[in-house]
Figure (cartoon, rainbow, N blue to C red):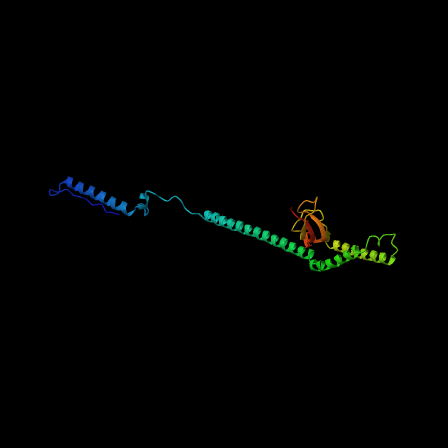
Length: 220
């Protein structure tokens, strides 16, 4: 605290000069006091662009939760994709297993086709007169009946396992189903039509085991 000073007028220092010095000292001391008691952030108040955004703990939590939600969404998407891939693999594997089971006998059945052909040729070699009821050759008739029954049972077994024959006589030639052995001009027949079947074709389900061997009407 400043001590008061008494200014005494004298002949050398008139009273007016003493008053002026006291006033000057008062304002000088006030200015010094104001400078020493100014707040430390007084200079910051002159900033033309003061920052108004402040980060709070709540904002940090909200940001962290948003990041976690994004991670969860990404993981869920990856999980769904993995499930879809696994289902596709399961269905593809099941299809392959079913196909292997369905066509497992393909090679074996194909080897038996010649047996069916031989039985058919044996039956066709017996004249119609010899296998009729009027025929007196009972031994040949009995043999024919036995061979015919054997062929019927073989074809029945084929069908049980998905093997069936097809006869394309009179159908349009199809290179996927037929094997053309020869061509010939046949009056009254449309070109490209099967007019003779030397061997019937066989399928295993929807797969061709052996194409039918045929003769095709030749184009003129």
